[in-house]
Image (tube, rainbow, N blue to C red; front, side, top):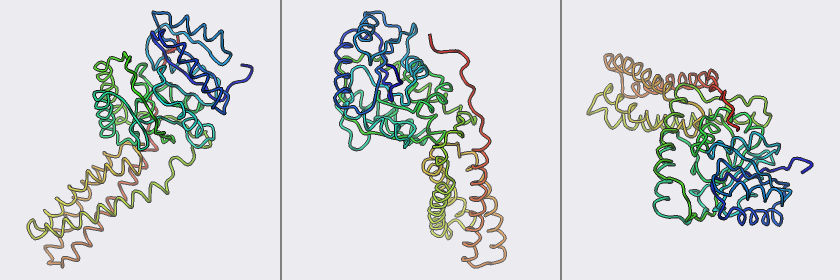
Length: 388
C-alpha cells in the first residue's frame, strides 16, 4: 500500500497451515464488502514448523492488503508485540485465526478508537448481550480466571483473554514496552496496565463459537496466567506499573478529580451510615468503645474495595492509606469516646464525636491516596528487543 491503512489487523499463527488460507480469504471478503476503513491484514507467524509460513507468503503475494511477518521464536504476545510495534497504522487490532468471534463485532471494536473516544477496545464473551457457544470446561475455566482477576485487582474487565482486541498505536507504543510477558498472559497484562494507568477501555459484547480444533494447553496456560497475575500484583503493590501519557491530549479527562471526589464522598457517606447503625445497635451490649471498634472494622474492607473499584478504578493501590485511616479513626474515636464516657456525655454527643473522627480520617485518607498516585514510579522498560 502507498499510504498507511487506518487499521492493522494482526493474526498471530503457529502451525496453522490447515485452514489458514480459507480463514484469511474469508476475512478479506468481509473487509472488502462491509468494513468502512482502510485496512491491512498482518499474518504474524511465530516459529511455525509446518507449511504455515509458505501459505502466509502466498497470501502476501496474492493480496495487496496482506502482509506476512516471520518470527523465529514462539509466543502470541511476542507476535503481537513485533507486529504492533512495527506497524504504521493508527489503530492496531488482532483476532484469532479461527475467527471464532463474529466479524460483525469488528467495526464496533475499532470505531471508538478511530474517533478518539477510547484508547483500547476488547471483545467480551462474558458481557450482557454476548452469545457464546463453548464447552463447559472452557467456560468454567474462563469465568474462574476472570473472577480471580476481579478479586485480585478490583478490575472492571470482564473477559481478559478473548482473542479480539484493538488499541490506538500511540498508546500501544507507550504501554507495550513495559509488558513483560510474551505468551498468553500478554493480553491480561496489557489490560491490567491500561486500567491502572486510567486508559479508556471499551468493552464490546461479541458472538463467539468455540473452535473444536483448539490446541491450547489449558493446564500450562492456566499456571502461567496465575504466575503472571501474582507477578503483576506484586509490581502494583510496589508502586510500579506507571506509564507517562501526559502529553496525549485526549488523556486529560482520565484522572478527573471531580468524579473521584464525588465517588469517594458517596462511598464514605454510605460506610458512615452503616457504621453509625452498627454502633447504635451494639452500644448497649459492647459499650461505646467496643461498638465503635466493631462498626469501623466491619465497613473497612467494603469501603476500601468500593473505592478501589469505583473511585480509583484500580488505578492505584488504596490499601495502605486505607489501613492508616482505619487505625487513625479507631484511635481518635476511642480516645474521644473515652473522654465523653468519663464526662457522662449524652449519646448524641458520642455520635457527633464519631462522625468528626471518621470524617477527619477520611480526609487524611483521600489526601494520602492522591499523593501516592502522584509519586508512583514507572516500571522499568524492557531492554531486550523482543523482535526477531
